[in-house]
Image (tube, rainbow, N blue to C red; front, top):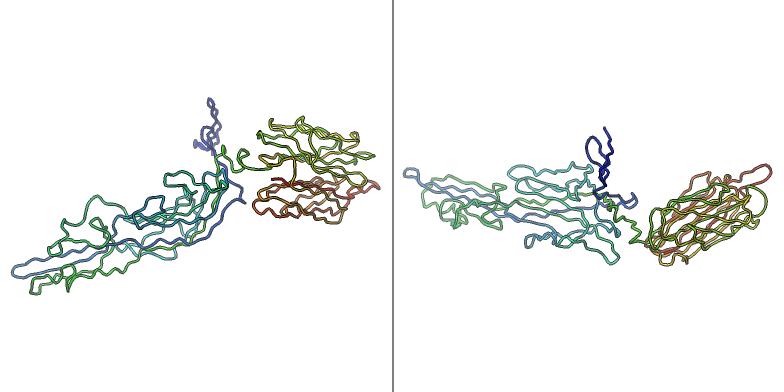
Amino acid sequence: MTVKFETLPDRMRFLEDSVVVFDSDLAPLQLAPSGEEIIVSTTVTFPDLMKGDSYAYARGTIGADLYRSCMSFLTLGPQEWGPSVSNPDSGRTLAESVLGTVPSGVDSLYVLAKVTRTTNPSQINGNTIPVLPSSGDWTVCAGGSLPLEFLWPLSRQIDVRLRTDASGDPVYNGDGSRDIVLERRQSVITTLYTYWRGGNDPTNSGWTYGGTAGAYGHIVAQLDTKGPSFTPGTGADMQRGQSNACSLTDTTDYSSVYSLDLRIIPVATLNTPVNSVTDNKVILYLGMDTDGATTSRVFDVLLEHPTRYIYAAVGATNNLGSGSTTITGVTIGGVTATPLVTANRSAPEVDGGIWVAAVPTGTSVTVVVSTSNSGYSSIAIALWAGYNLVAPTVPDATISSQTVYGTTVGSSLVTVADGWAIGFAMDRDFSGLTNIVQGFQNMDFPEGISLAYWCANSKTDGTTKLVRAETNTASSTGTSTRATGLRWFAASFH
Protein backbone atom coordinates (compact mmCIF):
# COMPACT_ATOMS: atom_id res chain seq x y z
CA MET A 1 0.00 0.00 0.00
CA THR A 2 1.26 3.46 -0.91
CA VAL A 3 0.45 6.26 1.54
CA LYS A 4 0.65 9.82 0.30
CA PHE A 5 0.19 13.17 1.99
CA GLU A 6 -0.42 16.21 -0.17
CA THR A 7 -1.00 19.86 0.55
CA LEU A 8 -3.09 22.07 -1.69
CA PRO A 9 -3.98 25.74 -1.27
CA ASP A 10 -5.94 25.84 2.03
CA ARG A 11 -6.37 22.08 1.90
CA MET A 12 -4.72 18.82 3.07
CA ARG A 13 -5.36 15.26 1.91
CA PHE A 14 -4.17 11.76 2.84
CA LEU A 15 -4.30 9.08 0.16
CA GLU A 16 -3.85 5.32 0.36
CA ASP A 17 -3.22 3.74 -3.06
CA SER A 18 -4.71 6.86 -4.66
CA VAL A 19 -7.86 6.58 -2.53
CA VAL A 20 -8.59 9.72 -0.48
CA VAL A 21 -8.99 8.68 3.17
CA PHE A 22 -8.90 12.18 4.67
CA ASP A 23 -9.71 15.54 3.12
CA SER A 24 -9.71 18.72 5.19
CA ASP A 25 -12.49 20.12 2.97
CA LEU A 26 -14.82 17.35 4.14
CA ALA A 27 -16.35 17.00 7.61
CA PRO A 28 -14.44 14.26 9.46
CA LEU A 29 -16.22 12.01 11.94
CA GLN A 30 -15.40 10.71 15.38
CA LEU A 31 -16.78 7.55 16.93
CA ALA A 32 -17.98 7.67 20.49
CA PRO A 33 -15.88 5.65 22.95
CA SER A 34 -16.63 1.93 23.02
CA GLY A 35 -18.41 2.38 26.32
CA GLU A 36 -21.00 4.49 24.50
CA GLU A 37 -21.96 1.66 22.13
CA ILE A 38 -25.57 0.54 22.31
CA ILE A 39 -26.02 -3.23 22.10
CA VAL A 40 -29.51 -4.45 21.18
CA SER A 41 -31.01 -7.90 20.61
CA THR A 42 -34.56 -7.94 19.31
CA THR A 43 -37.05 -9.65 17.00
CA VAL A 44 -38.19 -8.07 13.74
CA THR A 45 -41.47 -9.17 12.17
CA PHE A 46 -42.72 -8.29 8.69
CA PRO A 47 -46.47 -8.87 8.22
CA ASP A 48 -48.14 -10.78 5.42
CA LEU A 49 -48.80 -8.75 2.27
CA MET A 50 -52.03 -7.42 0.78
CA LYS A 51 -52.97 -9.91 -1.93
CA GLY A 52 -55.36 -10.41 -4.80
CA ASP A 53 -55.99 -12.95 -7.54
CA SER A 54 -56.20 -13.27 -11.30
CA TYR A 55 -58.44 -15.73 -13.09
CA ALA A 56 -58.17 -17.01 -16.67
CA TYR A 57 -61.28 -18.47 -18.30
CA ALA A 58 -61.44 -19.81 -21.82
CA ARG A 59 -64.20 -21.38 -23.87
CA GLY A 60 -64.73 -22.17 -27.53
CA THR A 61 -65.44 -24.90 -30.01
CA ILE A 62 -63.27 -27.40 -31.78
CA GLY A 63 -65.36 -28.66 -34.65
CA ALA A 64 -68.70 -29.52 -33.13
CA ASP A 65 -67.30 -29.84 -29.61
CA LEU A 66 -67.56 -27.20 -26.93
CA TYR A 67 -64.58 -26.86 -24.55
CA ARG A 68 -63.76 -24.72 -21.53
CA SER A 69 -60.85 -24.35 -19.10
CA CYS A 70 -59.67 -22.13 -16.21
CA MET A 71 -56.55 -21.19 -14.25
CA SER A 72 -56.30 -19.15 -11.03
CA PHE A 73 -53.28 -17.28 -9.63
CA LEU A 74 -52.34 -15.35 -6.51
CA THR A 75 -51.20 -11.77 -7.10
CA LEU A 76 -49.43 -9.05 -5.19
CA GLY A 77 -50.46 -5.53 -6.05
CA PRO A 78 -48.23 -2.44 -5.71
CA GLN A 79 -47.96 -1.56 -2.01
CA GLU A 80 -45.72 0.45 0.29
CA TRP A 81 -45.36 -0.38 3.99
CA GLY A 82 -43.28 1.57 6.49
CA PRO A 83 -43.21 4.04 9.41
CA SER A 84 -45.63 6.93 9.45
CA VAL A 85 -42.90 9.43 8.48
CA SER A 86 -42.42 7.57 5.17
CA ASN A 87 -46.06 8.21 4.14
CA PRO A 88 -47.01 4.55 3.55
CA ASP A 89 -50.20 3.41 1.84
CA SER A 90 -53.35 3.67 3.92
CA GLY A 91 -53.56 0.91 6.52
CA ARG A 92 -49.95 -0.20 5.94
CA THR A 93 -48.08 1.65 8.68
CA LEU A 94 -45.38 -0.34 10.47
CA ALA A 95 -44.74 1.09 13.93
CA GLU A 96 -41.14 2.03 14.72
CA SER A 97 -39.30 0.76 17.80
CA VAL A 98 -37.15 2.95 20.08
CA LEU A 99 -33.81 1.24 20.72
CA GLY A 100 -32.18 3.89 22.94
CA THR A 101 -31.08 7.52 23.05
CA VAL A 102 -27.92 9.45 22.25
CA PRO A 103 -26.74 12.74 23.79
CA SER A 104 -26.76 16.15 22.17
CA GLY A 105 -24.10 16.48 19.49
CA VAL A 106 -24.51 13.04 17.92
CA ASP A 107 -25.66 13.47 14.33
CA SER A 108 -25.33 9.99 12.80
CA LEU A 109 -24.91 6.33 13.65
CA TYR A 110 -22.49 3.58 12.66
CA VAL A 111 -24.51 0.37 12.73
CA LEU A 112 -23.55 -3.29 12.50
CA ALA A 113 -26.23 -5.98 12.34
CA LYS A 114 -26.37 -9.74 12.60
CA VAL A 115 -29.59 -11.36 11.36
CA THR A 116 -31.05 -14.85 11.27
CA ARG A 117 -34.43 -15.52 9.65
CA THR A 118 -36.49 -17.66 11.99
CA THR A 119 -39.76 -17.72 10.00
CA ASN A 120 -39.61 -18.06 6.21
CA PRO A 121 -42.17 -16.50 3.86
CA SER A 122 -43.91 -18.49 1.14
CA GLN A 123 -42.17 -18.90 -2.19
CA ILE A 124 -42.70 -16.63 -5.17
CA ASN A 125 -43.46 -18.68 -8.29
CA GLY A 126 -41.66 -21.66 -6.80
CA ASN A 127 -38.56 -19.69 -5.76
CA THR A 128 -37.45 -19.20 -2.15
CA ILE A 129 -37.12 -15.55 -1.16
CA PRO A 130 -33.42 -15.22 -0.24
CA VAL A 131 -31.95 -13.53 2.84
CA LEU A 132 -29.50 -10.94 1.49
CA PRO A 133 -27.09 -10.55 4.46
CA SER A 134 -24.96 -13.54 5.39
CA SER A 135 -26.94 -15.23 8.13
CA GLY A 136 -25.34 -15.00 11.57
CA ASP A 137 -22.48 -12.70 10.43
CA TRP A 138 -21.94 -9.04 11.28
CA THR A 139 -22.85 -6.73 8.41
CA VAL A 140 -22.24 -3.00 8.15
CA CYS A 141 -25.51 -1.14 7.61
CA ALA A 142 -24.65 1.60 5.10
CA GLY A 143 -26.37 4.74 6.30
CA GLY A 144 -28.12 2.61 8.91
CA SER A 145 -30.05 0.67 6.24
CA LEU A 146 -29.93 -3.09 5.74
CA PRO A 147 -31.81 -4.74 2.82
CA LEU A 148 -33.03 -8.12 4.04
CA GLU A 149 -34.99 -9.68 1.16
CA PHE A 150 -35.42 -9.18 -2.55
CA LEU A 151 -37.15 -11.36 -5.11
CA TRP A 152 -39.21 -9.69 -7.80
CA PRO A 153 -41.59 -8.02 -7.10
CA LEU A 154 -40.97 -7.93 -3.30
CA SER A 155 -38.26 -6.20 -1.24
CA ARG A 156 -37.79 -5.70 2.51
CA GLN A 157 -35.32 -3.79 4.66
CA ILE A 158 -34.72 -2.32 8.10
CA ASP A 159 -33.37 1.13 8.98
CA VAL A 160 -31.68 2.16 12.22
CA ARG A 161 -31.51 5.93 12.46
CA LEU A 162 -31.97 8.97 14.64
CA ARG A 163 -35.57 10.07 14.84
CA THR A 164 -36.72 12.72 12.35
CA ASP A 165 -40.08 14.16 11.38
CA ALA A 166 -41.84 13.73 8.04
CA SER A 167 -39.75 16.56 6.58
CA GLY A 168 -36.50 14.90 7.61
CA ASP A 169 -35.73 17.41 10.35
CA PRO A 170 -34.23 16.12 13.63
CA VAL A 171 -36.60 15.45 16.53
CA TYR A 172 -35.09 16.19 19.96
CA ASN A 173 -36.18 15.15 23.42
CA GLY A 174 -36.52 17.73 26.19
CA ASP A 175 -32.92 17.25 27.36
CA GLY A 176 -31.50 17.61 23.83
CA SER A 177 -31.02 13.88 23.32
CA ARG A 178 -32.42 12.00 20.31
CA ASP A 179 -34.09 8.61 20.04
CA ILE A 180 -32.59 5.79 18.01
CA VAL A 181 -35.42 4.12 16.13
CA LEU A 182 -35.73 0.85 14.24
CA GLU A 183 -37.91 1.10 11.13
CA ARG A 184 -39.28 -1.68 8.90
CA ARG A 185 -40.10 -1.25 5.24
CA GLN A 186 -41.56 -3.65 2.67
CA SER A 187 -42.55 -2.87 -0.88
CA VAL A 188 -44.10 -4.50 -3.95
CA ILE A 189 -43.01 -2.81 -7.14
CA THR A 190 -45.41 -0.74 -9.23
CA THR A 191 -45.99 -1.72 -12.87
CA LEU A 192 -46.86 0.57 -15.75
CA TYR A 193 -49.33 -1.75 -17.44
CA THR A 194 -52.24 -4.03 -16.53
CA TYR A 195 -52.40 -7.77 -16.97
CA TRP A 196 -56.16 -7.88 -17.59
CA ARG A 197 -58.48 -6.65 -20.31
CA GLY A 198 -60.83 -3.82 -19.47
CA GLY A 199 -64.25 -4.51 -18.06
CA ASN A 200 -63.29 -7.41 -15.80
CA ASP A 201 -66.22 -9.46 -17.22
CA PRO A 202 -66.16 -13.09 -15.94
CA THR A 203 -68.67 -14.30 -18.56
CA ASN A 204 -66.27 -13.87 -21.46
CA SER A 205 -63.03 -15.63 -22.23
CA GLY A 206 -59.97 -13.88 -20.87
CA TRP A 207 -58.53 -12.61 -17.59
CA THR A 208 -60.32 -11.16 -14.62
CA TYR A 209 -58.97 -10.00 -11.28
CA GLY A 210 -60.13 -9.74 -7.69
CA GLY A 211 -58.98 -8.90 -4.21
CA THR A 212 -56.81 -5.91 -3.21
CA ALA A 213 -54.15 -6.28 -5.92
CA GLY A 214 -56.30 -4.78 -8.65
CA ALA A 215 -55.47 -4.86 -12.32
CA TYR A 216 -51.77 -4.23 -11.62
CA GLY A 217 -51.23 -7.35 -9.50
CA HIS A 218 -48.08 -9.42 -10.07
CA ILE A 219 -48.59 -13.19 -10.35
CA VAL A 220 -46.64 -14.90 -7.53
CA ALA A 221 -48.26 -18.36 -7.24
CA GLN A 222 -50.62 -20.65 -9.14
CA LEU A 223 -53.66 -21.65 -7.13
CA ASP A 224 -55.54 -24.04 -9.45
CA THR A 225 -56.08 -25.19 -13.03
CA LYS A 226 -58.85 -27.17 -14.75
CA GLY A 227 -59.62 -28.34 -18.30
CA PRO A 228 -59.90 -28.28 -21.06
CA SER A 229 -63.22 -30.02 -20.65
CA PHE A 230 -65.37 -31.07 -23.60
CA THR A 231 -68.52 -31.95 -21.70
CA PRO A 232 -71.79 -30.78 -23.27
CA GLY A 233 -73.34 -27.57 -22.08
CA THR A 234 -72.64 -23.86 -22.16
CA GLY A 235 -69.35 -24.11 -20.25
CA ALA A 236 -70.49 -21.46 -17.79
CA ASP A 237 -69.73 -23.72 -14.81
CA MET A 238 -65.98 -22.85 -15.03
CA GLN A 239 -66.45 -19.11 -14.98
CA ARG A 240 -65.19 -17.20 -11.89
CA GLY A 241 -67.52 -17.93 -8.98
CA GLN A 242 -69.41 -20.78 -10.68
CA SER A 243 -69.88 -24.36 -9.51
CA ASN A 244 -66.88 -25.85 -11.32
CA ALA A 245 -64.62 -22.80 -11.13
CA CYS A 246 -60.93 -22.99 -10.30
CA SER A 247 -60.19 -22.50 -6.59
CA LEU A 248 -59.15 -19.08 -5.30
CA THR A 249 -58.18 -20.32 -1.83
CA ASP A 250 -54.99 -18.61 -0.64
CA THR A 251 -52.63 -20.91 1.24
CA THR A 252 -49.63 -18.54 1.24
CA ASP A 253 -48.14 -16.48 4.06
CA TYR A 254 -45.49 -13.93 3.12
CA SER A 255 -44.72 -12.83 6.67
CA SER A 256 -41.07 -13.01 7.79
CA VAL A 257 -39.52 -13.06 11.26
CA TYR A 258 -35.88 -12.28 12.04
CA SER A 259 -33.65 -12.51 15.09
CA LEU A 260 -31.65 -9.27 15.07
CA ASP A 261 -28.50 -8.25 16.98
CA LEU A 262 -27.27 -4.67 16.64
CA ARG A 263 -24.11 -2.77 17.58
CA ILE A 264 -24.94 0.94 17.37
CA ILE A 265 -22.03 3.38 17.66
CA PRO A 266 -22.94 7.09 17.96
CA VAL A 267 -21.01 9.31 15.56
CA ALA A 268 -20.49 13.06 15.51
CA THR A 269 -18.90 15.37 13.00
CA LEU A 270 -15.89 16.93 14.63
CA ASN A 271 -17.40 20.40 14.44
CA THR A 272 -20.15 19.18 16.81
CA PRO A 273 -18.42 16.59 19.04
CA VAL A 274 -20.29 14.40 21.47
CA ASN A 275 -18.64 16.21 24.41
CA SER A 276 -18.82 19.61 22.76
CA VAL A 277 -17.70 22.19 25.32
CA THR A 278 -20.11 24.67 23.76
CA ASP A 279 -23.07 22.45 24.59
CA ASN A 280 -22.28 20.20 27.55
CA LYS A 281 -20.95 20.24 31.07
CA VAL A 282 -17.67 18.40 30.98
CA ILE A 283 -14.32 18.10 32.77
CA LEU A 284 -11.40 17.04 30.58
CA TYR A 285 -8.15 15.60 31.93
CA LEU A 286 -5.14 17.54 30.60
CA GLY A 287 -2.11 15.79 32.03
CA MET A 288 0.14 15.03 34.99
CA ASP A 289 3.70 16.17 35.81
CA THR A 290 5.90 14.81 38.62
CA ASP A 291 9.11 16.61 37.67
CA GLY A 292 10.68 16.84 41.11
CA ALA A 293 11.61 20.29 42.38
CA THR A 294 10.59 22.27 39.27
CA THR A 295 7.97 24.76 40.49
CA SER A 296 6.75 25.89 37.03
CA ARG A 297 5.10 23.44 34.63
CA VAL A 298 3.49 24.00 31.18
CA PHE A 299 0.38 22.06 30.07
CA ASP A 300 -1.44 22.03 26.71
CA VAL A 301 -5.09 23.03 27.07
CA LEU A 302 -6.23 23.42 23.41
CA LEU A 303 -9.97 24.14 23.81
CA GLU A 304 -10.64 27.79 24.61
CA HIS A 305 -14.06 28.79 25.91
CA PRO A 306 -15.58 31.61 28.01
CA THR A 307 -16.70 29.08 30.65
CA ARG A 308 -13.34 27.35 31.00
CA TYR A 309 -11.91 26.85 34.49
CA ILE A 310 -8.62 25.04 35.11
CA TYR A 311 -8.32 22.70 38.10
CA ALA A 312 -4.88 21.81 39.48
CA ALA A 313 -4.26 19.00 41.95
CA VAL A 314 -0.94 19.79 43.61
CA GLY A 315 1.16 17.81 46.04
CA ALA A 316 4.44 18.89 47.66
CA THR A 317 6.80 17.00 49.97
CA ASN A 318 10.13 17.59 51.63
CA ASN A 319 11.67 14.29 50.49
CA LEU A 320 14.52 16.15 48.71
CA GLY A 321 15.86 17.44 51.99
CA SER A 322 14.99 18.32 55.54
CA GLY A 323 12.39 20.63 56.97
CA SER A 324 8.66 21.06 56.55
CA THR A 325 6.99 21.91 53.22
CA THR A 326 3.80 23.93 52.88
CA ILE A 327 2.22 25.13 49.62
CA THR A 328 1.91 28.92 49.91
CA GLY A 329 0.33 29.69 46.52
CA VAL A 330 -0.62 28.39 43.07
CA THR A 331 -1.07 30.36 39.83
CA ILE A 332 -2.61 28.93 36.67
CA GLY A 333 -2.03 30.79 33.43
CA GLY A 334 -0.88 33.80 35.43
CA VAL A 335 -4.11 33.84 37.47
CA THR A 336 -3.97 33.36 41.24
CA ALA A 337 -5.78 30.10 41.91
CA THR A 338 -8.32 29.56 44.69
CA PRO A 339 -7.88 26.52 46.97
CA LEU A 340 -10.96 24.28 47.07
CA VAL A 341 -9.72 21.57 49.43
CA THR A 342 -6.30 21.39 51.11
CA ALA A 343 -4.60 19.52 53.93
CA ASN A 344 -1.21 18.34 55.06
CA ARG A 345 0.04 15.37 57.00
CA SER A 346 0.62 15.86 60.68
CA ALA A 347 4.41 15.84 60.26
CA PRO A 348 3.80 18.06 58.10
CA GLU A 349 5.80 16.12 55.50
CA VAL A 350 3.11 16.18 52.80
CA ASP A 351 1.00 19.15 51.72
CA GLY A 352 -1.53 19.23 48.91
CA GLY A 353 -4.99 20.02 47.60
CA ILE A 354 -7.06 21.12 44.61
CA TRP A 355 -6.91 24.71 43.25
CA VAL A 356 -9.04 26.40 40.55
CA ALA A 357 -8.71 29.50 38.34
CA ALA A 358 -10.75 31.00 35.49
CA VAL A 359 -8.55 30.81 32.38
CA PRO A 360 -10.88 31.17 29.34
CA THR A 361 -8.19 31.80 26.70
CA GLY A 362 -4.90 30.28 25.67
CA THR A 363 -4.02 26.87 24.24
CA SER A 364 -1.45 26.23 26.95
CA VAL A 365 -1.13 27.27 30.60
CA THR A 366 1.77 27.50 33.01
CA VAL A 367 1.19 26.28 36.56
CA VAL A 368 3.49 27.80 39.19
CA VAL A 369 3.60 26.35 42.71
CA SER A 370 5.14 28.30 45.60
CA THR A 371 6.23 26.45 48.76
CA SER A 372 7.70 27.38 52.13
CA ASN A 373 10.67 25.11 51.56
CA SER A 374 11.32 25.65 47.85
CA GLY A 375 14.91 24.48 47.89
CA TYR A 376 13.95 21.03 49.17
CA SER A 377 10.41 20.50 47.85
CA SER A 378 9.33 17.80 45.39
CA ILE A 379 6.16 18.77 43.53
CA ALA A 380 3.57 16.82 41.52
CA ILE A 381 0.66 18.31 39.53
CA ALA A 382 -2.43 16.91 37.77
CA LEU A 383 -4.57 19.23 35.62
CA TRP A 384 -8.15 19.32 34.32
CA ALA A 385 -10.27 21.81 32.35
CA GLY A 386 -13.94 22.28 33.23
CA TYR A 387 -16.56 23.75 30.87
CA ASN A 388 -20.12 24.98 31.39
CA LEU A 389 -20.19 24.00 35.06
CA VAL A 390 -22.92 25.66 37.11
CA ALA A 391 -20.65 26.54 40.05
CA PRO A 392 -17.07 25.85 38.96
CA THR A 393 -15.52 27.41 42.08
CA VAL A 394 -18.00 26.00 44.59
CA PRO A 395 -17.75 22.18 44.78
CA ASP A 396 -20.87 20.18 45.58
CA ALA A 397 -18.73 18.19 48.00
CA THR A 398 -15.07 17.64 48.90
CA ILE A 399 -13.13 15.01 50.81
CA SER A 400 -9.64 14.86 52.25
CA SER A 401 -8.37 11.62 53.69
CA GLN A 402 -5.16 10.09 54.98
CA THR A 403 -3.88 6.57 55.61
CA VAL A 404 -0.66 4.83 56.52
CA TYR A 405 0.88 2.19 54.29
CA GLY A 406 -0.66 -1.26 54.35
CA THR A 407 -4.15 0.06 55.07
CA THR A 408 -7.14 1.02 52.99
CA VAL A 409 -9.38 4.04 53.48
CA GLY A 410 -12.76 4.71 51.96
CA SER A 411 -14.64 8.00 51.94
CA SER A 412 -17.98 9.04 50.45
CA LEU A 413 -18.25 11.86 47.95
CA VAL A 414 -21.70 13.25 47.17
CA THR A 415 -22.30 13.88 43.45
CA VAL A 416 -25.06 15.59 41.48
CA ALA A 417 -26.77 13.95 38.52
CA ASP A 418 -24.85 14.67 35.32
CA GLY A 419 -22.05 16.10 37.41
CA TRP A 420 -18.32 15.43 37.52
CA ALA A 421 -15.83 14.42 40.15
CA ILE A 422 -12.05 14.74 40.18
CA GLY A 423 -9.51 13.45 42.65
CA PHE A 424 -5.88 12.60 43.28
CA ALA A 425 -3.74 10.70 45.74
CA MET A 426 -0.09 11.29 46.73
CA ASP A 427 2.61 9.94 49.02
CA ARG A 428 5.55 11.58 50.76
CA ASP A 429 8.12 9.73 48.61
CA PHE A 430 7.19 10.17 44.94
CA SER A 431 9.28 7.11 44.03
CA GLY A 432 8.20 4.81 46.83
CA LEU A 433 4.47 4.36 46.31
CA THR A 434 3.81 0.91 44.87
CA ASN A 435 0.07 0.62 44.57
CA ILE A 436 -2.78 3.11 44.57
CA VAL A 437 -6.05 1.46 43.64
CA GLN A 438 -9.71 2.23 43.18
CA GLY A 439 -10.62 5.79 42.43
CA PHE A 440 -14.13 6.63 41.26
CA GLN A 441 -16.06 3.74 39.67
CA ASN A 442 -13.36 1.23 40.65
CA MET A 443 -10.73 2.58 38.26
CA ASP A 444 -7.31 0.98 38.74
CA PHE A 445 -4.01 2.85 38.63
CA PRO A 446 -0.66 1.42 37.58
CA GLU A 447 1.96 0.50 40.12
CA GLY A 448 5.02 2.63 40.75
CA ILE A 449 3.38 6.04 40.55
CA SER A 450 3.24 8.40 43.44
CA LEU A 451 0.47 10.75 42.35
CA ALA A 452 -2.68 9.06 41.05
CA TYR A 453 -5.47 11.02 39.45
CA TRP A 454 -8.99 10.21 38.36
CA CYS A 455 -12.03 11.84 36.80
CA ALA A 456 -15.55 10.46 36.39
CA ASN A 457 -18.96 11.56 35.19
CA SER A 458 -21.85 10.82 37.57
CA LYS A 459 -24.18 10.61 34.54
CA THR A 460 -27.83 10.46 35.63
CA ASP A 461 -27.71 8.66 38.97
CA GLY A 462 -26.43 11.47 41.17
CA THR A 463 -25.57 8.98 43.90
CA THR A 464 -22.83 8.99 46.52
CA LYS A 465 -19.54 7.69 45.15
CA LEU A 466 -17.19 5.64 47.30
CA VAL A 467 -13.57 6.67 46.81
CA ARG A 468 -10.89 4.25 48.03
CA ALA A 469 -7.11 4.39 48.06
CA GLU A 470 -4.41 2.36 49.70
CA THR A 471 -0.64 2.05 50.01
CA ASN A 472 0.57 -1.50 50.30
CA THR A 473 4.28 -1.19 51.01
CA ALA A 474 6.80 1.24 52.38
CA SER A 475 10.16 2.02 50.78
CA SER A 476 13.26 2.93 52.72
CA THR A 477 16.19 5.22 51.96
CA GLY A 478 18.90 4.54 54.50
CA THR A 479 17.14 4.44 57.85
CA SER A 480 14.29 6.74 56.78
CA THR A 481 10.99 5.20 55.80
CA ARG A 482 9.56 7.26 52.93
CA ALA A 483 6.18 5.76 52.02
CA THR A 484 4.79 6.42 55.47
CA GLY A 485 1.32 7.24 54.26
CA LEU A 486 -1.06 8.54 51.70
CA ARG A 487 -2.89 11.88 51.43
CA TRP A 488 -5.72 12.12 48.95
CA PHE A 489 -8.42 14.60 47.90
CA ALA A 490 -11.55 14.69 45.73
CA ALA A 491 -14.19 17.25 44.74
CA SER A 492 -17.48 17.06 42.81
CA PHE A 493 -19.10 19.67 40.55
CA HIS A 494 -22.12 20.07 38.29
